Image (cartoon, rainbow, N blue to C red; front, top):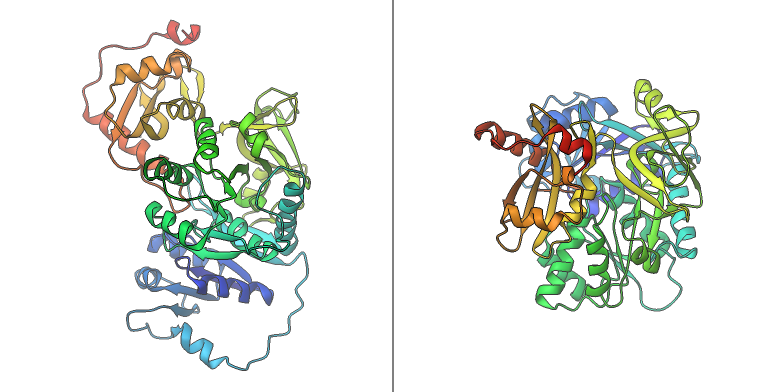
Length: 489
């Protein structure tokens, strides 16, 4: 009890079995990022103090390249190479345990259950630790929200055909672990696992397995919308197409409603630290408020505060703060991070948001994901949403590009279905954005934009590539003036 059991592998059934085994006896399941490189894997193992690691061959190869703790026990899952000294195969462990009794451990609601590492924009990731009570509060809250009409596809099955969910997001993210896996126990859903995201394969699985529920970030759900439009595939079994991880563009919300005849689009906002819940929205509410992340869950409280910590009225932007039973216990061995994150019982999310008069929450941007151009703050999400209204733009990523005079200029990398000209794009954006918000730099891709493991677009990589292009290019002679910026013309 209390030992950390690290799991690092693809979405194999053994991932799920290892997770359930660890948490059932009071150990802490450490869901490690399967895309970590050897030095990151070494950090996670040492930081968590893991006693045991379950890893597949890809991760075993990386383990061999790092300075792993000498006392670490290793169980090799689906190994295809000779095992390192001291490692044991999963099959041998399972065969040796045949007939063994369940270990007797008293697991209490407030015992630690899981540790998930947050990606973080700088420095080492932090291990977010949640208790059994935190997780159960999140899972049951989704059912409450579903009964209130805030979500679709989260109610326990009550007769009829068994629902089926497609697990397309890595299990080391709360969207995969909580929304797809753990919620399936209460809903009695059949779970179909994907090795990695492949939109063509996903469509085949949805048709063959009659998938009823699907959850993914905008880039992933956008893939399905595009295939449904292009190929006319039968995706009528879907009754819920969920989102999360990032805000969908309003155009994609409407496209989901049109592309899937029986599916109610839904989404929500949550974090690793909140066990994936926070706000929810679905169906007619979502179509009427496509830019919103929904209303706050019934088991949580939220507030919007300014830089001085003063609560703001409806319609005023500020930092979103949250409290409630699903919030993590804290960061593993990081009292400094806990002090920065928790204020008088409230958790600082780092998200800029506002709440309208009806209680709908609108996430404007990450506090650290703004372009600050000549002293003017520009929300990347708003610019991305405007770009995605263009019928030939499939994916958009907006970021800040360094500028000597203005601090930053707005840059955008676009995946398009047809060739576009900069001037035409700016004309398209003029009625949708203030002049200072329109990107100065456009870069076009003929392939989908790179993504991190959760399916989100890899913004940091695209921003770095833009900086490299800028450094190699001759500085343009036409520059915006400060009066343009101040006037917002």
